[in-house]
Amino acid sequence: MLRQHCFAQSSPPPTRKAPPPPPAPPAVDQEQFISYWTTETGWRTELQLRNNQVGQVLTVTPVLGTPDGSEIALFPVVIQPRDVKTVDLESAIGSDSPQLIGAYGSLTLRYRAPSQINLYAAAMITGVGHSIACSSTRCRGARILRPRRIWCWETSLGLCQAVPARTQASLE
Image (cartoon, rainbow, N blue to C red):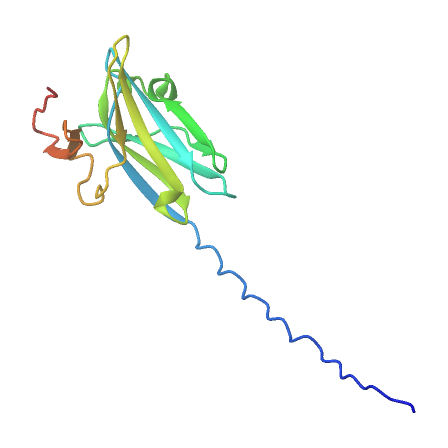
């Protein structure tokens, strides 16, 4: 007796390819504001700039604003992906703009990136020879309160107090 066994072979179900990821958003002009910088005698301002992008180089142009409303662009800073650059403002100013030595004001950071969060920026202001240092991170809402007209002072509670630039303000 001869038996035949027939087995039907079924092909595996077709595999579905995942849809391609959406394209990265295009780079657009971005600005961040830092409320205060100084090169006055006894004080030093250092910018800390971090490129949060994974695969793109970021070029940031610091623009110093002065109380009289003028703006002076410094040399662009090139930051590799996931890297941090530190910029000493007095060294960056150098001899090109001697009117900025012993000065103060606000700071605008200009760059092209898909999003504003692609750059983390902070200014560390230190009293040279003293144990005083404070951090001035970018002001949220600075698009409304232009830094050339508003100074932000951090209170003891960590809150930002906006003071018109024409007003004399002191830190206690």
